[in-house]
Length: 117
Image (tube, rainbow, N blue to C red):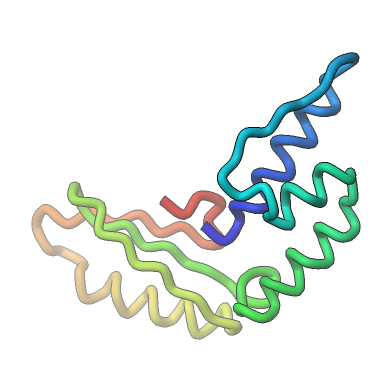
């Protein structure tokens, strides 16, 4: 999930904001991870700059759009990524038209999904 670092940083920051005294102990296999280091130093700006730079390099939102298509009881999942909302919409429409009327086929289409699984 490309949002894992963001979710981790957010969760730890929420936890820290609720703490009135004491300390937070984070047990991790990745103590050198930049998300953990930024949280430890309460450096949101550095975290945000790094997160956005990584997303730009890998062409993830906000520099692209995602569409998740989940099909049927066996949860076959297809993730489409592209810069053009129109092209993604047309591709999804083509897929749904081909599967329309097929017995036992159910699809869920999630544009800009928050959860990846």
